[in-house]
Length: 210
Image 1 (cartoon, helix red, strand yellow):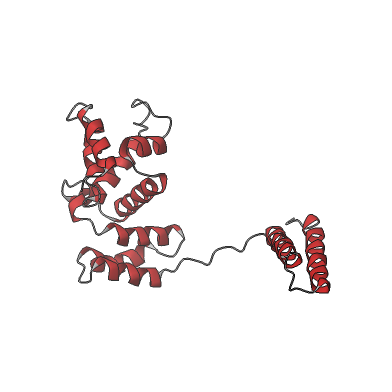
Image 2 (cartoon, rainbow, N blue to C red):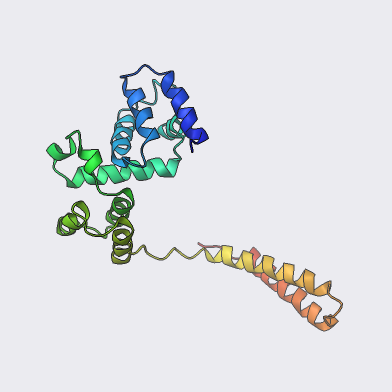
């Protein structure tokens, strides 16, 4: 089934002279799921050479979204993943016309690029596992799972204490309101719930993260 985005890209491509770099990127965007590295390579060039400017866009992200129907995060993942390969593979290999078609699956390279960005993957370690991704004996989903477990993301940072206290105060106030509105709850309990909400609100007003 042809999507609205694909139809729009086709219309845009029809309005751009064939053979131009802009037309090449549009065609690649239409088929990028099967040849992600092709589009990643082209997007890196568009970004690095600011080609989006003469095409009438205010930013690379705006160009990717409006012309290619690619969200900011997706464009970032594509450019980062291709840049990862370009960094670790020989330049003469990267410049080969069939390099994008031979590139490992996007979901696998994305995990490795993220791991390198976090400082978890060194060039030496990439070389040690290179054969497992370029001459893969496992399906992409298994490789991705293996690398996600090998290079786990760090746990998210806890929210600031001031935010936690404000959230607790809001929850306490909501609870106090519900308790006071329930006829089955004794008045003494409703009063304690209200007092707790007041205490937390007072605490929240004086908490900062300095």
